Structure formats: C-alpha cells, structure tokens
Image (tube, rainbow, N blue to C red; front, side, top):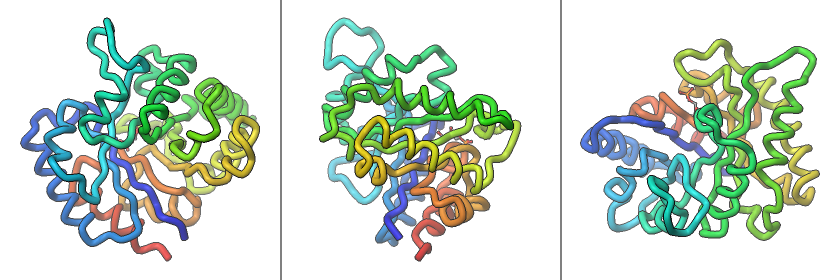
Length: 254
Ligand code: 13P
C-alpha cells in the first residue's frame, strides 16, 4: 500500500496563536511515531512561520490559498514565493468555500500554475454542490477539473494532488454523508477526466483524497473500502486527539 496523505485544513481557526501552537505540538507527538504517512497542516497563513519554526520536521505545512502574481500592487494578497519563504510546501486551491465567495476556474488555474512554478504542491479541491441521481453532477466535476488544469506543464504534474470534496458533505451543516463507494465511483471518474487532460500514465499517479466530514470513525472506510489516497480533514484536524487518531489509522493500514 502506498503512503497515505492526511491534510488538515484549519480554515479560519483557531483565533489565537497560542492555541494553534498547542494543537500542533499535540499532533507532532503522534507524527513522531509515524513512518509511512504524510502529514500536512494548513493553518491560517499568519501562523505559518511561527508553527513551522527554524528546522522543518516530519509535520509538513501548507496554506489555504495563494495569489498568482510574484509581487506588486495586489493589496491583501500573498505570492507563492512569499509562501515558500515561510517554509510552507503545500497550498490548497479551489476550495468550495473560496469558490462560494466568487473564485472561478480561470483564477484557480492561474493560482495553480503560479504555485507549481514556485515549487509548491497543490491540493486542488473539486466537488459538486448537489448530487443528482442522473449523474449530471459529474459534468460539474469534469468542468472544474478542465478549467483548473488548462495548460499545466506536464513536468509539474507530480506536484498535483486532487481532493474530492462534495460540498453537501462538508462542515457542521452538511446535508448528507458521502459513502466510500460514492467516493470510489467519483475518484474513478476524476482519474478518467485527468487522463484526458494530462497523460494517462501521469493521471494514474495523481493522489486523490477524500474530504467532507472525515473523522476517526469514517477514515478507515474511505482509505480502505473507498481506496482514497488520503484525506482532507476540516473540523477533526483542529483537535490533536481526533486528528492523531486519524493519523494512526492511516499508518496502521497494510
Ligand atoms: P469538514 O471536515 O469540517 O467537513 O471540512 C472539510 C473540508 O472542507 C476540508 O477542506
């Protein structure tokens, strides 16, 4: 079994640096005993430098967004190069919460290209708002992938990770629960679309993670029965105990 990738998306939490440090130090205790699980934490960018510290350890870090320009008159934005300066290695792009505030495919595509060029690994989020029984939602996934990945240089494709996050299964207001079978079906579809955008061989190697109320109770089913290459965890990544349990589950898989 290949290495699983478990990513924590903290979103706009917690509200103090002290709390952020406490969560990270708890998570690091679990990470110390892991050998084959890749662990990435994506806190608010303001905490990154402090949490990463001077020497990079086994717990890797990323951001939840990045701008596409290197520098200039772009008030409020952070460039991929600046992000790299903090020691961050990953960036989540195209999250549904950013799409909901107006981020469109063309912007996501620009961000992906700039982030990859700077050497960051990109976690591209895709997912439908609603699931219909006729499979029309697959068209949404296909369009999201095609728009986001226009003209991605083939040599940078090994920096790509996809997170399939059905919007209706995310957060405390989720209206439904994704099943491992549902995930698997959609992951196969995503790979099929990828093989039309990038070359077939590369499409087989892009990790596809599941996200949407992932926790210690359902982690194993998504990773084993669902065949997920990893998880993008929201709420449960804000507790060192809950996230630690997920990490131990991922590590224990044969
Ligand atoms: P939850 O795990 O809180 O549902 O969030 C999922 C998510 O959006 C991760 O990016």
